[in-house]
Length: 132
Image 1 (cartoon, rainbow, N blue to C red):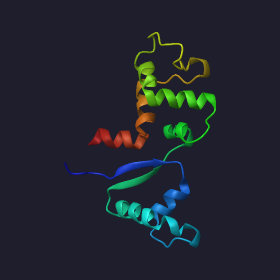
Image 2: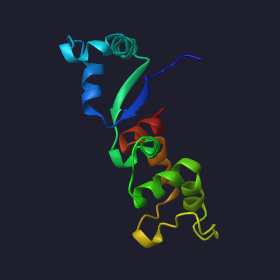
Image 3: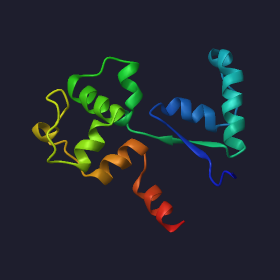
């Protein structure tokens, strides 16, 4: 199958995105990154991938890389294991008490909103997909 658009790579690290998207030279302190950076830059130039900004609060991988406070941890955990989609699709369904309900902190979302967060779609992306 032909790849019509570059695959998005979401990240909350602006410095990393600037380095990956900029063809300029790297400073002395970043010499160890040269090969990995050049490989990333080549994939960006070949339109295989593109970098996109994501909010730190929506980075699901953060629960495996840093200490996250309870509220964001529970929300990200439920996104990762699929409970958020079940809760959004079936808001009246009785869930295990271990599953975050969301109602207590105003975090209950519609199915479409939850899917958009999980898939990393912006409003612009959703509109573009509807027109294709």
